[in-house]
Length: 57
Image (spheres, rainbow, N blue to C red):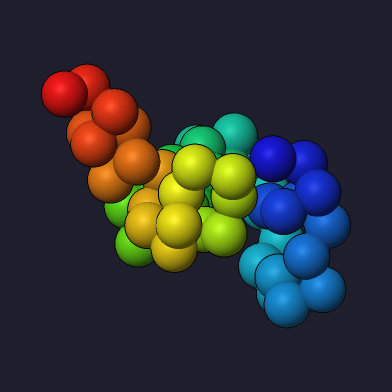
């Protein structure tokens, strides 16, 4: 998470307090888990949430 959230060159927002940092992190995690397709071993271009839901069966 550190490498993908904090060290991304595209990130232009400076967080000045913990509430803003938490909000930014929550938004990023929502995007990462629900919107961003992954090419990992078991994801096959699905989001992590889709992969998790498919594995429950």
